[in-house]
Length: 376
Image (cartoon, rainbow, N blue to C red; front, side, top):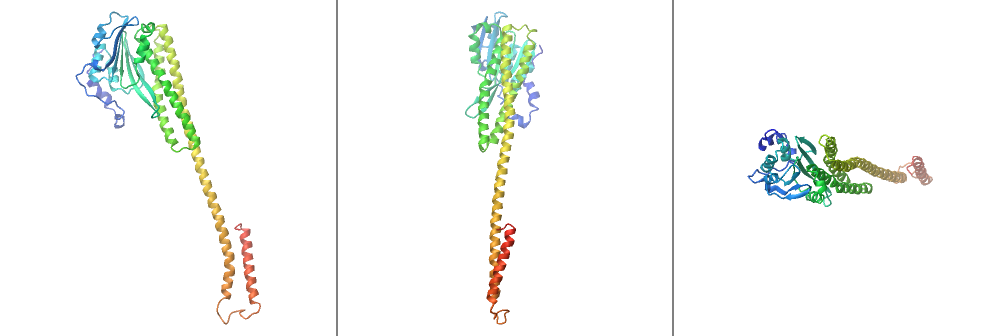
């Protein structure tokens, strides 16, 4: 096992490449204080043959409480700082790269083996009904021959239920650290079920809003799509991790009961991944349908405006036509109403009937012309 480097020297290599945008997603660094690692230990127990035998107060006591290779220490830590995690790594002889990942956090779910120790990164998810958002938590699991060390950087997942479940089933717990690892995997995967149900409910609501023409539905589709993508990033790597564990069954002589347990977890994870893929595709289709409906609505509005403009033009043509017809007799009457002594046809007996006839003929001619053109 290579000699551990100080954790401080590891941090620049991982954080130096972070951009300003990535910095907002990085774990808030807590100052390294000379505080014991036990201050972040939320639960500590030693088990032998599936039964709890001790609750050590320190990490060194936990290791010292292991009477033989059939015993196991299960330590749970919550948000340790660099020095505290380094102290735990020294006690359990953890690989420096795994410790670095546990310190930096915000890793993709993965499984790596360092000698006899498995390092597993999991991302738990929780659906919040109040905000209709998915909250993600990160969990690091170090699984050695005689110990399980869990490091949580967020409230979820809550491993107390997993511990109670395992303690109530000594036959499963006596199978050792791998049994605890599989139980943690099962709890994380089962925790995805409420998230899937919540996302499905949101999608159903969005479908109703799309076809009812609710405003702002496009933004909600976009935000939910981002949630689904983040959920995919948390769940999709699980299948590769579980396949990796399955591939080592024969090499590491995994118990047959644990193999069945892992296959059950794999089945549940496969369903979750398929549902997440279906959600993303469905949201893409909904977004396309919404864009089509919006386009149709805009076309309908344009058609209504065009029809209104056409009707208005028809009314203007009718008014203009009647104005022209009525203007003709006015023009003729105005000519004959001039006050001149030497006016053609002024003293003609047929002048008045001629003027009236001219008015009627002019109006009839204009009416015929406008009628043929469709203005009247």
